[in-house]
Image (cartoon, rainbow, N blue to C red; front, side, top):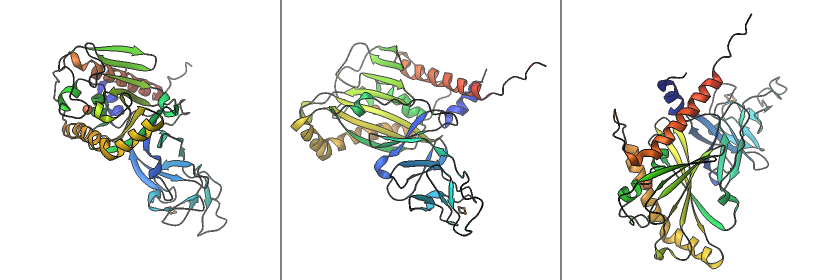
Length: 337
Ligand code: FES
Ligand SMILES: [Fe+2]
């Protein structure tokens, strides 16, 4: 069985063999964009049909960064010697040597990618992509949403643990617009669900950040509701859907969709209020999380208590997956003679 150090090493930059949110879709336009996710340098670009493509950001000729190149005639074009690749990564042209035998050969592998809710998701695995299911809100026209994203200079593990730790809402965000309400004491409980778990306060619901659902549906994501004070206009709770993607061991990209179930003029009003007034307040709350997470340093032995059951449940789940991953990579036993 894998040791704790081995599973920690797998988890350090993110579990492979699953889907991850990479970047807002409208950040990838006419030119290649270079990013780092799960410790890998990736290039994102759009082919001649406008479909987003993801490759390792390294030209297979001599290793120049594709992200320093261009998209020309719908082909990814390396800046160094001008080699061109299609969306499947096949070498299409070697302009400096017409008729070169490399033309038509596989050049760089594509990472399967899809766009959803103004975000690019990619399968970061070697094997066949797992089925990917999105939160129902993404396809439900009754939900109106905004995507906000940011890079946090802290481990994605801290950021994930932060969202399965509802009790911090009452303390860290005590003076905030949405999270200044309710009791500062409670008991937490965990409920296993079909694709993950829910962690919730037992004595309070609908007053503060009182519960989180953690789902694994090809990608890991969370759902939580926050109460809106009357000044936020008509409509129900403020919902958050979150995906957190490792950049490397020390940084992560957080993606939070902010949603409200409103239609007609109420939707227009909320969207206007969000842009003109509410967004800044929500960013302020998120900044409080970022500032804490970027400075965190795990103690030798944490003094965990009852409220940390979401954190410990998540850690066990990730450790189990890391062990499964290591097991699947282990060499098969030698066949009996
Ligand atoms: S390194 Fe890309 S074409 Fe030479
Ligand atoms: Fe928070």
